[in-house]
Amino acid sequence: MIRLEKIEEVKKIIDAIPAAVASAISDVRETIFAMIKKRTPFFTGNLLRSWSTVDNKKGSLSFSTGVLYAPKLEAGDFKKVGPKTVAQGGKIYSKHAPGGILQPIIEDESVTDMIVDRIIKQVMAI
Image (cartoon, rainbow, N blue to C red; front, side, top):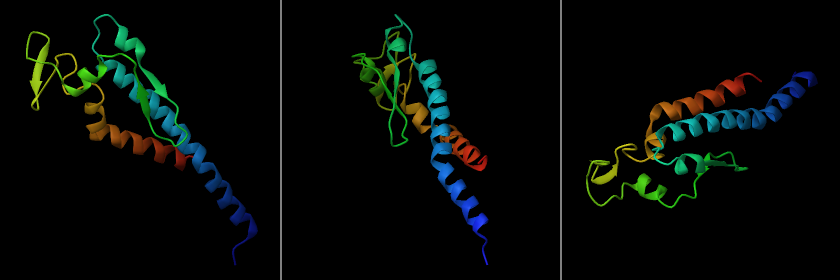
């Protein structure tokens, strides 16, 4: 027969999981934010300074910038290859952010592994 104390212990662990996951996501958010800043081209510093994290109650990772030329950098929408641009995957990107800023981070399997590992580590620490 299961003792009441064991059931209460399991309940405490289950109740602590959302906070552990939230803590891991917060940690991951800061790491990815640093990665975004590192990939951001720096000419005037305007784009670099404009990045912000977006708090989302659902536990997703969201980042934002209001700089008008950021979508062009991300999408590789430059008109032609020149001294500051490079052709890649049928698009033309800034040489300082080939493949965009966010997309290479999103597609990097090591980033996905890092997210999962940090969540597991936080949950296992309960």
